[in-house]
Image (tube, rainbow, N blue to C red; front, side, top):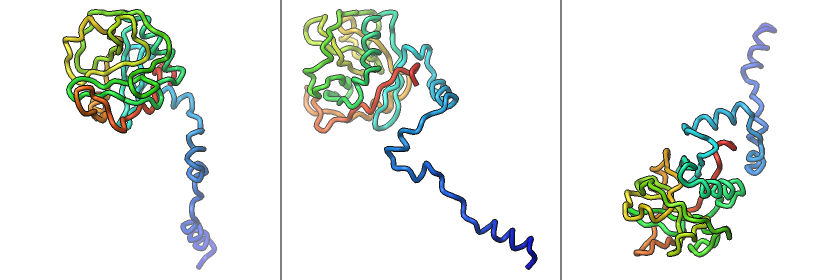
Amino acid sequence: MTEEQKLLKNAKTQKLAKSKTKSLPKEETKKLGVSKTRAKKIKHSYQVKDPENALLLKLKDGDVVIEMFPDVAPNHVKRIKELVRQGFYNGLKFHRVIEGFMAQTGCPLGNGTGGSGQKLKAEFNKMPHKRGTVSMARSMFPDSADSQFFICFDDCDWLNGQYTVWGEVTSGMEFVDMIKKGTGSNGAVSNPDEIISMSVIADL
């Protein structure tokens, strides 16, 4: 065997070194940064009209994009963005989910009685409650909305003009459909699904 053949043989049998990131624990790989170019690609992968007024809602089954309506509910949109940027919604439960009606979340107590502590004056508008509509939950008092909101599974015309519509699901509604449903008329959920995270798309 010539010297050249020996070198070729050694080159073929030599094992490639493992990627350093693959040997890191999961908690360490999560800390690895994303390049500016990659972050820009991620942001533009979501087809939205205005990234500053669009949300990325991560659920167990997939990503949901919500485009907000600052023109008809400016104060609600402003407050929702504040809470999202604070990380308020991350990990909160879908505590009330009724098949064919809606999925409600945004309560830090997980039972529908809590909020952020800041009530919002109603901004009822002409936007209809239809499949994919995102609207603010409230008590019997019009100006009692806080942090809780719901996403409609189907058209809910009887809610029109009585609750503040502030957004609409424009992508990923099939993942909203997969949120665990409650039992009974109240829709309370046992071991409910959670919001993994919510982000303003402009911040990605």
